[in-house]
Image 1 (spheres, each protein chain N blue to C red):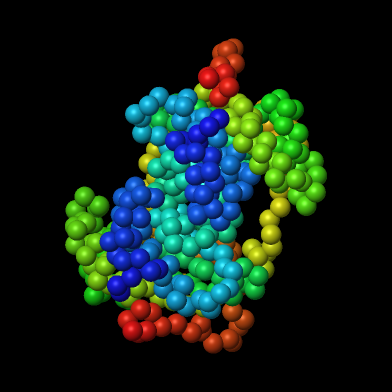
Image 2 (tube, rainbow over the protein chains, first blue to last red):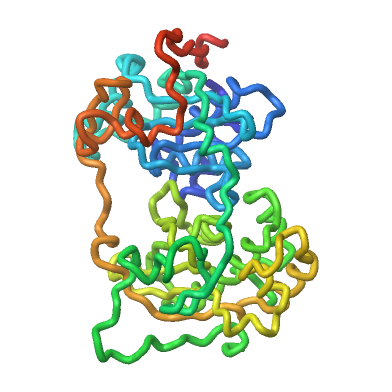
Length: 207
Length: 207
């Protein structure tokens, strides 16, 4: 395949470096997957996207389509499968592109990488990228799908209230206090008796 | 504040249009938040990021830092708070920037928007953007945090196996079959007796 969503292969690698930090094999594969999905989607529709893993594929979608995590048009699901889906955001009909093991045999280094047959340090990354480029979209299956109805509904946070624990705004539907003040917090709590966190200077205080 | 991570305000709006589709208020606020976090982080460290909501803020981080969802340096948590955190990826020390209601009073349209005091259709978006620009980083609190140890560990998928149901590769630790073949699937299952999904032509079959 010569082009990835209108970009030459080298242009795509450069985009990958800029957005993702480096041209990861998963992102290169993802580029071909998005290209394949777009070719199989009716043109002119408004589509949303699903990535079935959080590794690499969300970035291919974000680089090559209008769908991002922050605008809500891309959902990242933790299904562990190397697959993406683009679908009509109103109707829910779309196409799913997935890693198809039956197609790996011709590309042994790709097979080794996707099925993790060797530790990463023993894989040949140059050969892998060569094979990914050569294989292009041929590594992937494409199948029509229909998205479940509840995923099509527009999400709303409902009303906002202030958390009695941290004082910050949060969706009232989450309960008596915000989810950040419960077990889900990613932050260490300070030991009992420790002083309150120092508030660092903000913009106008700095200037 | 004149600049957002080195970009003029208008340059940032243009970046927002290109990546996010439009200069959403949440993304403009997010730009100031990322700028504020970076100013309070020691320079030269390798940092990872957390967005405490999936609305807008992940995109501000992805546009302005090397951290993306797909490269794993950005975690998007569903805590419902309008906050981000950048932290030393090895040590876990970092800064959290959060919407601070005590600071909203000077910016009534920002307050109306963040606390959803009126339906969106009754909010004044032009005034909101003006106030966001004027307020810049002053809407946000900044506090030092430490990330919980288990979030610093490098995630590994472990070994990969083929799902007996769909035939696709998935992390063996997920169980007997992949998570996409269980209740978590986003796709409608076809009614009993319906024909198998047609496989659409892939690249080499199209050309």
